[in-house]
Length: 107
Image 1 (cartoon, rainbow, N blue to C red):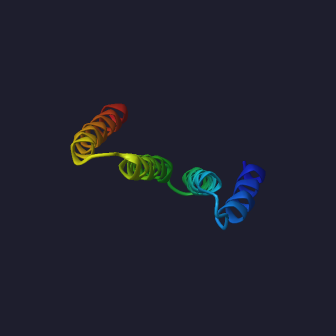
Image 2: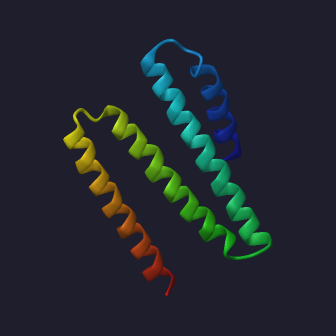
């Protein structure tokens, strides 16, 4: 996992300076992978070594980061304001489902 994260980091640094829109989209994807890998790995290690609850907190933070990251991407690509309004409702619904799942999973 560490090797893959280092490779993704190098690819992100390389792709982010490109003028090509598609290559910059790859840079965004590499950046997302680096962030999620680092946070996931750190949370797992800290949860194992110190407090058990650090790992689930890291998972929740990653889920929120993922939802917001991809929500932003969809909003950037959404056409008219009605589509954006519909997406806001879907995002809110998905967040509620996620939180309900987390609550039920921990009881």
